[in-house]
Image 1 (cartoon, helix red, strand yellow):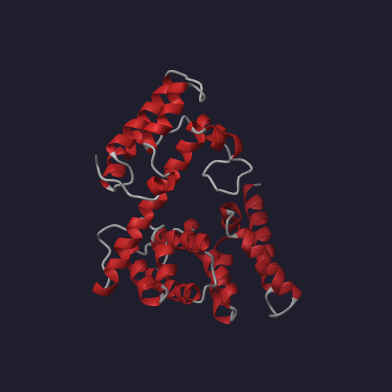
Image 2: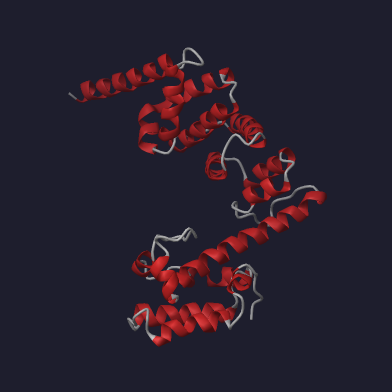
Length: 290
């Protein structure tokens, strides 16, 4: 009985992969378009990629050289890289070759930033070092703004080496990464301590990490942030020691003392944090350690 179940599973997998082959046998057809529409969804569903198995991976590898459209190539590579999470071993030389192919797509703006970041982390999982990927990004992208948008989300450390004329870009990317981190933290802070932000966040066109203050409150924020990241936040100038103490006080008031968010003690923390300054100046300015 066990053998029959395994054979049945193999037959199911083979049948699905045969459908994929049918859909992609002719370019510029509705069937071909159907495959890439499905691929956009499938790449983010690991159980499906795992189900399709090695046969699916091999077919994507065979299919890639036949794809001319840059957007389809980018999507296929992104899917292939996500499949690597289920592979026991991935050939490093092929990964580097695939990364080169993906860099051509990135240079042609054939993928959005979120997909690029997800794909790069997939490459890291498959054995490509962050330094190798960053060097290729720097070598391939001429637009400084575009490059910085990507690098700022990769948590670059000092081990990454690039040419001297581009080293300043890495420093700027680190600064942007810290600004992004800082603004996200303060956005959550505002969801709790500012009554207008708390009231209108769900309908505001300003994007917050949580849909409403309820999510922040339910997560007992900032308790999950401070104990493990405090020193890192200070070292990266994301938050000052004074700001850390204000967040610790917020945690004490709402998570330990169970103070209401409209209590004077909680509302006072807004004034303590911004000290009468322009909030946007404070949000988008990295801090010293004091």
